[in-house]
Image 1 (cartoon, rainbow, N blue to C red):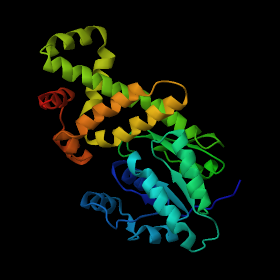
Image 2: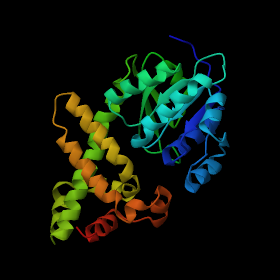
Image 3: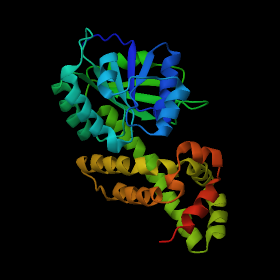
Length: 299
């Protein structure tokens, strides 16, 4: 196992999760940089709020980084890996190969494919998965890691970031994330369909009374989680598709999680699905208000 000295961290990209992680890593004393060429004004604003240095392009970011953390929507993760692999042969020597940690919600088989790509280009690869809300305020995450170089990420431990090494096998951290994600994303999709359907069918109040009496914990959980879900629906489409692929590889039907992907695809196309997480937090809708807005969308 290669020993890794991590001083400078490159982060792609400082979105809702990435920005919060970057702030915590800066608190640990790391230099944290990003590349904002071609990024949206929202991403630029989030990077500025976190005080992240902008290297400009990805080539420059790789030249300045010992570790690259990929924290993206799952649908963009492989694109970034391919871009990095194409640029790695020209990366200036820093005394050690780049450590590339993919922290995205991808199936184990996708992580294996990415490992081959990154290692063929001369870098070292870590399979990682994040569970928990963005680590700002009271938010806490568990960073599950696996692979021969996973132990190197232990230095990222923070009171808001718990690093848990699963094994030295690529794909094991992904498997934990996929199985756990099936519980959260699958349940949110199912319960959202239930509540929206009840409202459209005109039995919302009767169902709510029944849930209060027989499923109070489940009712409170979904209403608490609904307000933050619509802006993330577009990211949950590829994530639930990756979960479906994970289950298919394990010998189960992919259809349940493919159905969840369809639900999130529909939600992403609504007005509230097009909001940013910051806009959703500012509007502070209740869970029932989210249900009402989704139910009002024409089918």
